[in-house]
Image (cartoon, rainbow, N blue to C red; front, side, top):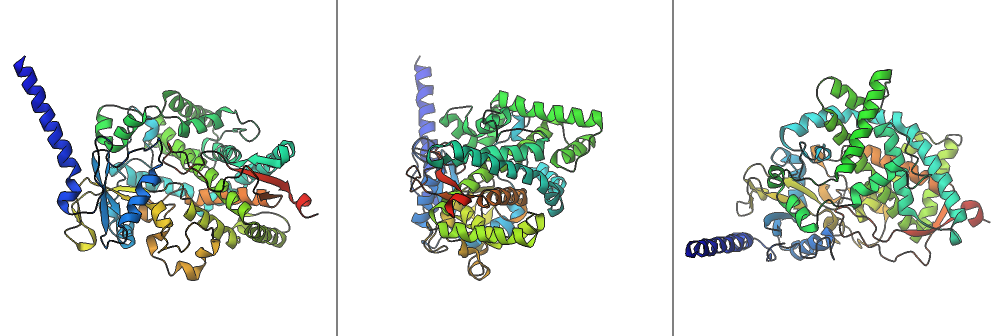
Length: 499
């Protein structure tokens, strides 16, 4: 009995020493930090009362003017580097990319196959897969998929008009509608299936899409453990995605592959590239499903929320909305009333509006990387980053830094005119990341966002209403920026507004 008590006391003493040593890590190194507390570190309230940006942005604001290239914080028991210097961010993402190639995110291809996709995987698997998949997102492939996206965009305009006619005072919750639009787009382009989500909100594809982002398989503490210690979680064969969601997407891919191979169907789309890779022995069916899933994941919530945030800001500033509408009308006039791939590329003010939307609402509000080797930040040996250490670039904080963007909470598309762009550092706008591991689907995301805005603004006027929030609150449990209470706007046909 005494031996058991002694062992327990020793274990408690060792545990206490480990935790105390862990939480003194940054202080012992002389790096600015806020002390962490067991067991959450600096993540108190995360996913309950605070979004990730509510924790990281105040830390960035507190230390950004201290002259140091980075500060430290604690993701549970894990000491993480918080990047403060934009030149250092540029070096990490571009110049010294070879040392910071990995994101260090949880992935478990064996037990949780949908996590084995391009966004999450690291090491020797990532680079060849990126090279093989890049042709799918070239300008030529975007032009090919343009007409398919436009078909869904036209239907978006029709459904929006029908819903507005039937809604009280024409007030619509637009974020759900935008999600149904993007799920239909990606269903056609990535999975080769007609989803019908615009007409039927309860269509299985749209429902599964919402569930994939909204539902957590585990409680917040276990999720935090998986994200903080991905290697250990993988050893323990832990999973993040619900099994029925995995079965659904793997099943769609399996059936699509079967039909195309049996019937000799060849399409110039994302799924066809994956099938060719499978036939060459480069991908298994589960790996195909994972890549199709990240196409869906990267384009569904991200583009839907970008569309919603853009309409919200344009509704608050009708003069900007009208300026964009006039540009759309002029582009259509120059192309005999037809919206073409070439006319889309001529929408310069549209580019500014989308860029400013992503500046104010970066859907993925932080970037993570892992250092492979010992690294002296900007050549300063005091500010070293250890091998295997995670670092975080606070995209939301940078985008709202008044030293980089004066009056950051105002929506000003002209910030992205060429003369103003030239005055800002390279790494000051990061909604798609930067460098070799930037978002592979950037062109596709911009295209479906532009097509959605064109088909809405050419027919409807959007304005604020009593249900429109003065400031958007974000879903605390989602790592992305998603409106917590929806976005309500008044939608009117232009013919009614211009009478």
